[in-house]
Length: 216
Image 1: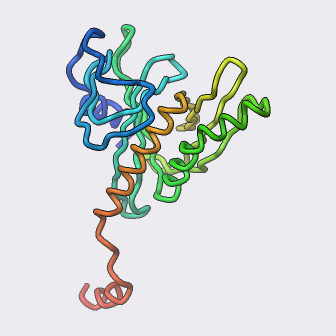
Image 2 (image 1 turned 120 degrees about the horizontal axis):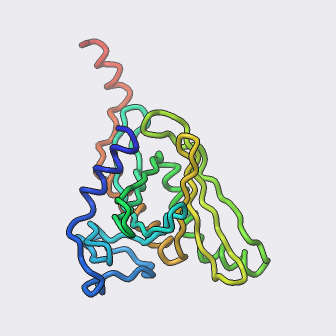
Image 3 (image 1 turned 90 degrees about the vertical axis):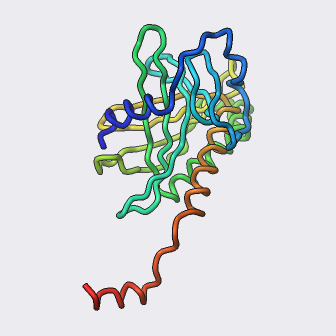
């Protein structure tokens, strides 16, 4: 499935019912904890399925929300699809973006996000404006190599923030979030990944694979 097609399907499936700002008190954009039991939250842009973290699409300065799912792949095993939903706002249509990682990459992604408070503090204390922690080359939906990195930003006007950069088809996509939303995104991704791994049947023993060759 091409990224554009997936984004459109993702928006229609994860965003429903426009709600005015007056009814938007249920969502705290700076909360660091993730509630896996949450069915949806009310935001100024509508109701979003799940319990997302809030991000900013740095190319448009529009608000987005995170969503994670796990998908099996016959060649690469279980994949974490870390997605960002950007609802329609400011007269612009909604959109979305997704990043696909294998289990090891997903765990690195989660670990880096979890280090956000510590690394932001170290950066501020040592006057390091920006530093990058690569996730590495991840595989896109069409099999093309993409590059994913998490950057930690600190300056004299900020207590620190996180930037996720994803190179896709030669185009750089960047999303910013605060320290607490980064922790929430990590918890959301970890819950999704570990739940999917627990529900994934163990691979058949090698001896069974050998036996199966007799009955082709």
